[in-house]
Length: 130
Image 1: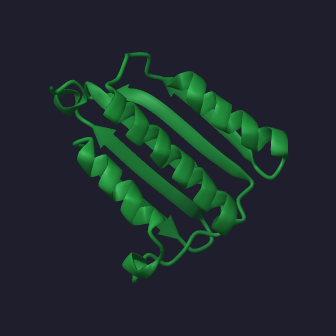
Image 2 (image 1 turned 30 degrees about the horizontal axis):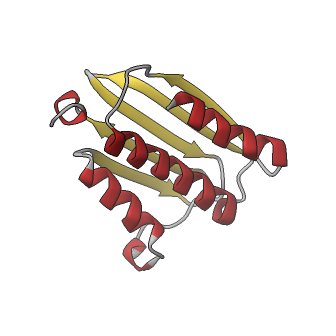
């Protein structure tokens, strides 16, 4: 999974639109559903940040936390008002649906002028459930 994330980062960094910094400290093999869900969420976050935030930096941290998989995505863009968020596009609902299918939790925070942050966590018992 780390190679796929790095490839996404390289595409954006090469384009020069924005800089992405990633720290991937999770090296365990993941089931296909989990890996695909996490990659799609990362891609969606990057695309939303590039399209809407005006950010200069996106950070991606993928680590082991409390025995599970933690993915923290953030940008330093303009942020947005979270009230009435459900009315905005299908990207956010797709991300929520993907993480729910993977048995994880999803927390999005944003504030006008400070950027956006997405915390995803999948407990170990859900990572390798059959």
